[in-house]
Image (cartoon, rainbow, N blue to C red; front, side):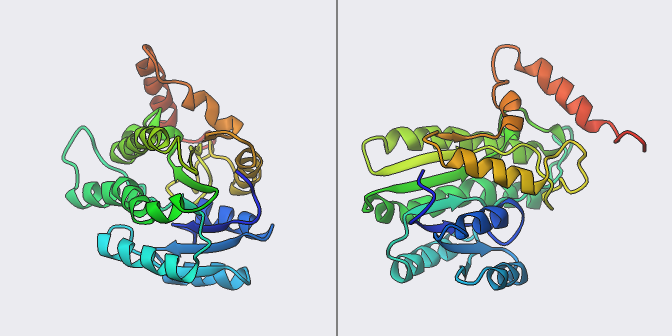
Length: 251
């Protein structure tokens, strides 16, 4: 996608990957609007980046999504990029009783949220000469982390949905991209993960890939896991989860 001259809405833009990408896209002169769950984080990000804007949005609430979509179209008529980035990652127990709140909030935020947000803005995006939808999935959609089975499943589902959406929009002006990060050092359960990329490295590498003509925005560190699915995928899933269950060396 082109990296300048856009009006971009990023959900989950107040922290982590969302904030990093919002700032990286703001610097070359794009108009960036962010939303987030935590108002203080949203305000901090906007204050640190003069010219950036924010809207309050609860991606778990269909009425909030509809209201924000209407507000965005009215206040930012040039909006041509939707970045579905908001997500939550909570531990669960696929071998036991799944907490109902964890289940519902994870599926609603990570899967229903992007579908509803895109649906609410779709006709507006189709009216633009060039428009982009970017869905943030995860390498865990291809190699699930067993301790976050529901999260991993939502990302696999969003990957599938992105493929269908891309096909359905192939004859329109709207391009569908999928960004599948590896483990990145953010507050999304990865803060102390020794296997994770630094946020700075991830953003720098992602921006380079985002500026190409690819449908899948993958940094090098994501490619091995992205390419795992196939007849023998179970063996690597076992190996991966055994590795992730090991305590860090030196502890």
